[in-house]
Length: 76
Image 1 (cartoon, rainbow, N blue to C red):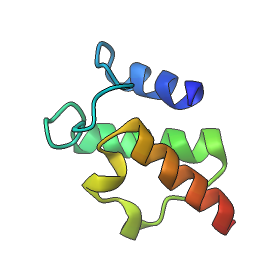
Image 2 (cartoon, helix red, strand yellow; image 1 turned 180 degrees about the vertical axis):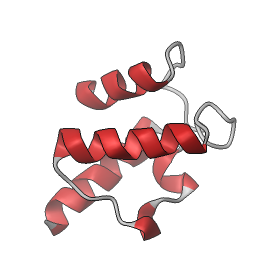
Image 3 (tube, helix red, strand yellow; image 1 turned 90 degrees about the horizontal axis):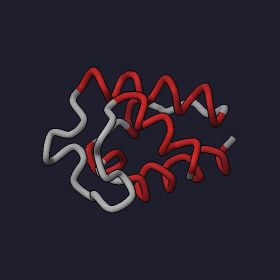
Image 4 (cartoon, helix red, strand yellow; image 1 turned 90 degrees about the vertical axis):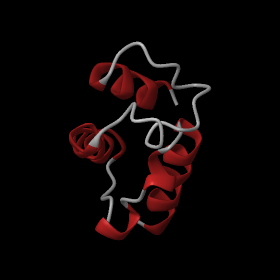
């Protein structure tokens, strides 16, 4: 979790990532931020995020991102 929080802070500092569950819905993360986030997640966690998984529900909170990362690791 710490690695993901660090990635998010580098992309857009000052957001309460641990408690916010509407990162996409409330426009804390925009499309360019998501692209950068996906690239960083793929590098940091050694996973590939398929296009079909790039949906708001997978990126609205740290919890949902961690679930996606764990799912992708299990599939690997």
